[in-house]
Length: 250
Image 1 (cartoon, rainbow, N blue to C red):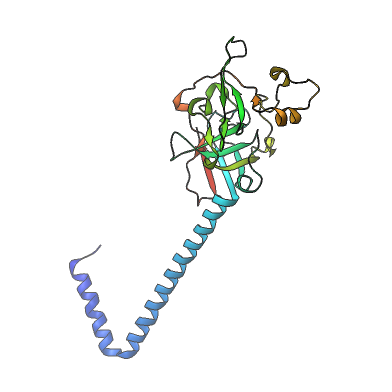
Image 2 (image 1 turned 180 degrees about the horizontal axis):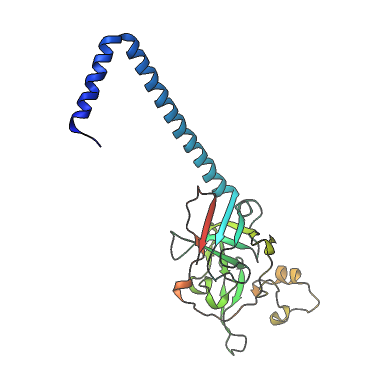
């Protein structure tokens, strides 16, 4: 408990000691003060250095992400822990079928975790296969088309349209928890990566790669345009970049 007179008493004692021991006490006092300040500054410096290293590693190399939410089920379940790397977008490019982390086009403060369905120049079928009049979306240059694997509970490019390539932060490629699913992530259960050449009037003998190269607008088989609840929009990161484990919430 602090008493008003205690500070004055302490200062008086220090003055008496200083008068008694003279320069020796002043030297000892300065040495102790320099030691405490030096340790404090070193601790602060190490903390800043490690925080910068962790931030750079998570931002430019990769990190561990804990996921929650239904938009990527069954590929990524609630509370799954996965690894993300940020090098592909710089050196190899994002491929169709990759699961990526990107800034949300509708909310710049949050991030989304979706699968790449279409690349620039792709023609996305957004109407039902049984509809007489077909509707399509073309992915413009510098954009990608993103969707969640759980089409019934995911708000994605069907809601906010193609996503600029510059918003992509990294690619999720490996699951480390639960141990029963330990390993590389599998392809989409919706089969988006299998182009349908018969719907484009091209020779059935052509391989999918030849079809994609020869077609002026690559047509990606797609599901009907549906709008999920806005409450299930985001599947992104909420932890600061300097943390060792980020969290993804839907």
